[in-house]
Image (cartoon, rainbow, N blue to C red; front, side, top):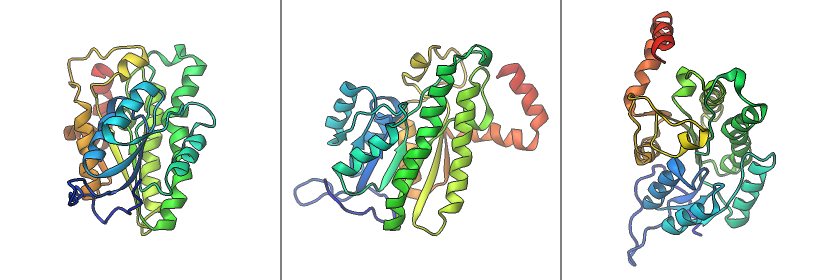
Length: 269
């Protein structure tokens, strides 16, 4: 695997004389066996990144690794030692991680009073606790190199709150605040933090959470649209990006007219 550092921007790497792209750097993508993570992996590979891809579905993960010339690192990030084991495997494979895309996520839908304790623990573990530990383990290397990029995949549920997704909303809200706080802390270090906020994405997420998506609006967007937004954020150094972009407006309405927003959300949310 190529050990090259990423440059100050992340434009597509130029082809070599042999027709292959030079490496942009090494990216670790979680949740890469399907959905957003798989789409991000394909987009990063097209942009010249060497990939370490991880997910729970080993068969699908190896398909993504083969399609992106990446290295598959199957892992269960819901386990207590999942983050540490993954990062250990990553650094055993390569001596650097220049980009971390924390894309793994799980959900659960239903009344909070009926949510099993195990489901609470799993959502918080995968969507929040594991992300914190992954960043904690990867960040010292980036700081030592004085460059790197951390992309945290959140959700519009974490900026607005969604009925009958209380724990998922809480975990993603924590990711939003963590991204802001960490960005302030890392200012001037050469390490950047981007918070990506997707809305409804056409993936197996809803199937896995136990309840299909049934609303007419907003319409699900393809995972590739989120992957393109991640790429755009890398290229232009964006701190936060909503997918689709219009989703930032409900948050702004809530900021300037919270009472009106909450009444509307209670009725239509």
